[in-house]
Structure formats: structure tokens, C-alpha cells
Image (tube, rainbow, N blue to C red; front, side, top):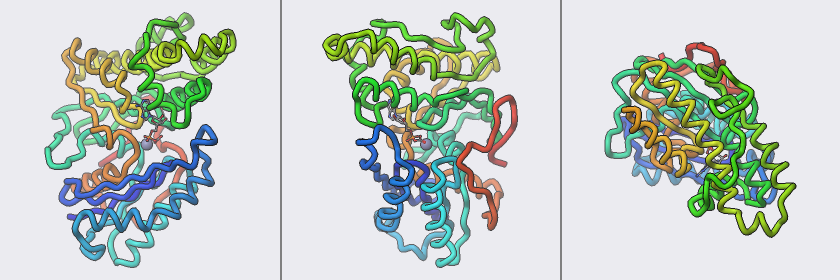
Length: 353
Ligand code: KG4
Ligand code: ZN
């Protein structure tokens, strides 16, 4: 089965071809037009997707050595994401499916991230035999879920305010770094001291306010943002410039240590021996290293997507569409487009059937 996937939920325009579960092409174009604004401008994102979607799709099809008529299924992200941006890819994909007379499959972007560690590009990356705890961390989402063998998942925690990627981007902006600041902080942090300044860690064993942090798998990063801002206001520009790597490393550690602690406590409390991290922030080298060390200490196997599949990409959309179809889900003629994640924290089961 040959599936074309389309992804346009935020600031990456992407198309990919997956044949029998294996990636044949994955073209990703990251929009640069937002860097001057310190964040993604939704209207600009939609226009840029509109400008690129046809040529990116052509490249994906050409690189896979097929013609459009050979496609069996067209899949696209139907949310969550910036609604105008989602609609560009979705309408294009649905129009293409209609013109070619092929079935169309809408895909949930977060579900696709959850399964991105198991994308197959030659080597097979099997999902764990039993349940696994998934930490999905991106610019718009921070979610901890327990994924069962039947691929249904239970959301056990999510952010109460900012997403982890947003915490990187917004604190990085305060340091004068360009958008997206996550990768910039990552690079700077490599040369810095994470113990240089201790920024707060909400809802963890390190927080002063929460005594019942154990079993609370929600996250909160807005306090960190305020704390970085007020601390920076007390420093001179010379001091900040001199210690930029140390400050970046301290911010990164404040975010990463919370993500690692909550994920490991979740896995241990459920007796689960497999953990995965996915989404743009899973590209962070500090998170990858700290999570690997914590998993090794606890006898847990860690699953991480290749760096290209950490950030937004269409290979994960086509892959998940294939998994859904192989499990008997049929293409839908009617579905809801949503800017929001359509699942709630607190034990609700969702996902693939
Ligand atoms: O998954 P993604 O590409 O898009 C969304 O669905 O949001 O994630 C983008 C986010 C941005 O906030 C970006 O700063 C962050 O992922 N990110 C990183 C790194 N690479 C991307 N954050 C920290 N370290 C990185 N290396
Ligand atoms: Zn994403």
C-alpha cells in the first residue's frame, strides 16, 4: 500500500510517501519568515503553506519514484494545530484524493508524534510488546500518556499553561535568541553549567508549594518563564552576555529535569518498562541524554525518533494512517477539524482502534 502524507499544522510544510510501512520520501520545508517576529505568525504560516504545498508534494512523489496515480491513499493532519495552516494541507490533500479517486484519511497530529519513534526507513523499529509511557513534547503540546498494546492511550498528564517547547522559545526570546529558540538553547547549553542558577520546577519533588507532586503528572512552565524574566532584569547586559551558555544550560535543565522526573515516576508507578519521547523538544540533546541515563538506572527501555522525525514531518502522518488502515479503520468522508488536542487528561482513553 502506498500512502501520501501531508503535514501543515504549524510552520513546517511537509509531504511524504510511505510504501508498506516504510518511508520512501519525506520532504520538510521549515518556514523562515517567522524569525523576525519571535514566534509563528498564523496568517503568514497559512500563506507559506499555500505557496509551497504543490511543489513539496511533487518532490515527495518524484523522490519515491512513483506517479500520483500509483498512490493508494492520501492522508493529512486534521489537527491539532493552527487552524488556517491545518486547512491548507487538509483541503489540498482532500482535493487531491477526490481528483485521483483515492480514499482520504485524516490523522491526529499528536497521535502521529506518539508513534514517530517507530517510523520505518529501512531498519524496522518495532513498538514495545507491552504498554509504554509516551512523553510528547512540542511547541504546542506537553503530554504524558500510557499507550496500551491495542494502541489506545490514556492521557495521564498535560501542561496546565505553556508547552515545553514554548518554555524554550519564550525564555530564549528573553535572551535575544531567534525563533525557534529551542535548538539555540540546546547548542549554547552544551558549553554551559546547568547548576549555574536554579530556576523553579513546578509540580515536582523540587517545588516548594506542591507536597502531593507524586502521582501528579501535569506540568506547568509559566512560573519558569516569569522567574527567568525577573532574574534577567536584575542582571547587567555584560553579565548576561558573559554567562549566556550557563544561563541557557540552567534554563534547559529546569525544563528537562521536570520532564524526566515525571516520565520516570509515571513508568515506575505503573510498573511499565518502556518509555518513548517524541515531538520537537525530543530533539533536545540534554533531554535525550538525561532521559537515557534515568531509563538505564531504572531498567527501562527508551524509544526516541530519529531527529528528522522529532520535529513536524509528514512521514509520521503517512505511517500512522497506514497503521490505522491495517487495523481495520476505514477512510472517513466526514470528520472534525480542530485546533485543539481532542483528548482530555485524567484517564480518558482515546486513539487508535
Ligand atoms: O513538534 P514541533 O516541530 O512542532 C509542534 O508541533 O509544535 O516542535 C517545535 C518545538 C519548538 O518549540 C522548538 O523550539 C522545539 O520544538 N525544539 C527544540 C529543539 N528542537 C526543536 N527544543 C529544544 N531543543 C531542541 N533541540
Ligand atoms: Zn508537532
